[in-house]
Length: 67
Image (cartoon, rainbow, N blue to C red; front, side):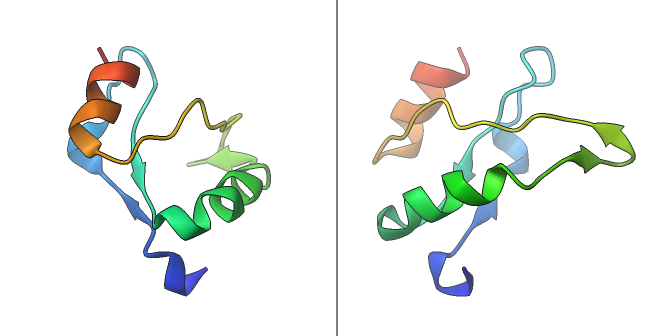
């Protein structure tokens, strides 16, 4: 997964909606979605992380999924 170039974009996190954007190479989108299944807790809190969509442009992803 190191070649995937995964970046959690902190400025693209909407705390009210509990949604954010993760940047990843388009060749590794399926691998990223598969790896999200294994996240069970964050900071001691139980969570469910799921992918709701993909976009080739960050601006369009933000408009579609965070607004």
